[in-house]
Image 1: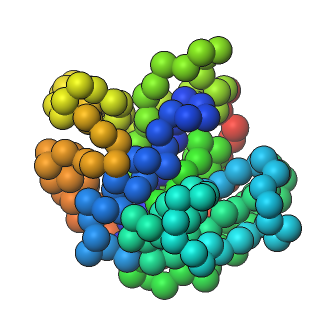
Image 2: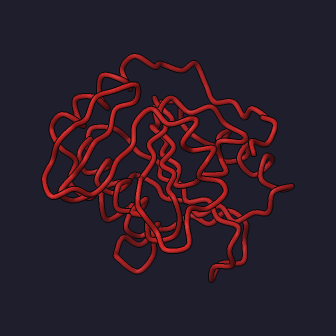
Image 3: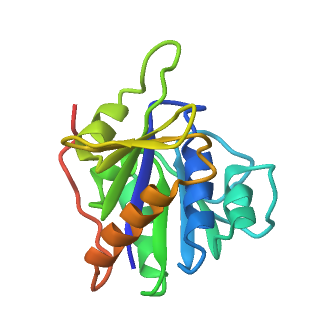
Length: 192
């Protein structure tokens, strides 16, 4: 089991596309995909489970890509830790968990953190600084698939929905090295 966080510089950066690519690239893993938001959506409950695969919502896209389950967690800052604990307690231990969120890094230490690096008009979300500090790798759209090694690894993909063979091998290696006994929510001091 592994916990992966996919964060991004803002709306439209490609976080959902990368998660769908990850799920498709590793179909043998029983994925639970969770989108975390503080924005209003067309659901009343704070934890909503998507049941219909499709292209209409991010959670429906997760299911269409092959996720076993897909959740939308809608919460403000003060309610988030208890909702996150609730979600984690209900999971079977063999699940692999992927979060689409920057802010989850305040409460959870993932096994891997991927940063979707995109230049956006108006600059990056403030929470992206936290993703940059925690990231194990950055992922960006490029003309073709290639890897840039350095202090942190940088994957450039021709499509975020189709991971390269080197990225898949890197993910499998990292996930195999991080075996958990269970889930835990960790309260972190907010990062600037």
